[in-house]
Length: 102
Length: 205
Image 1 (cartoon, each protein chain N blue to C red):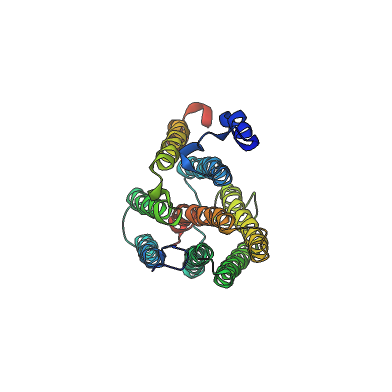
Image 2: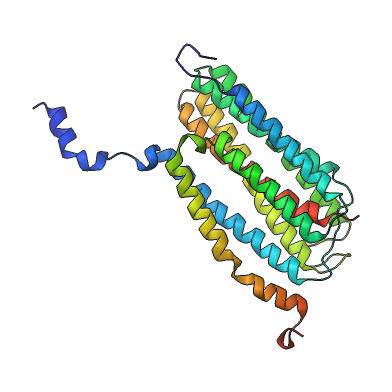
């Protein structure tokens, strides 16, 4: 829909993305009640959350229209997330039990 | 050469193209969002370390009704924000103000539901350092992560009202409303990760 000032409305696209986000969120709630292991549940929920996040970034926050900024954001976020992973070894060691943790 | 041309030539170095072709104010918001992403990522990963390393992690949530309602409200508020920005870009001030205020109202309802949930958990005996179900670390992690998010929502509601009023008064333009919208979508985006990790993985079956 074009307006008097030449602005093209994207309301239709926003509504479609909104409905998809609602469906994905509903899927997460369904997974929460499914009879699967904690690890599987975590993986599925996290994957769906990432899909939701990417959709919101691309269409609600308009990163789809700015590839440069999209890459800047993606590289920074992935870098931060990777550097945060250093603690898992200690986390598992604490769970399994080590001499100094007892 | 006119005075204006001389001035422009003198300031040519300061008039380079903005980074990623994004105006300075919008870029400042993106840098804030990137920094805040690191903050929330740090909180959620630290929460993951604790949950993984603690065998008696509590599962205090009996129902998904409240969190489902909160998720629906926050997602809907992102859509209403987009309607507001769409109105502003089309030059329709009344539509822009109406949808921005609806967004702020939805944010306020979300905050009230969140506080109600906190009070219910506190009533059941949960504090920052102890709870009746297991390790006391749960309260610290839960209140820190959801509290930080609630703080962002509250700040967002205030910002939406302030920017909406100033936009209507002619002091701010559609770009300012769009920048505030970016922040609001980010708050929504964070909630998409908080819900599965902090709520749904801690449901009591």
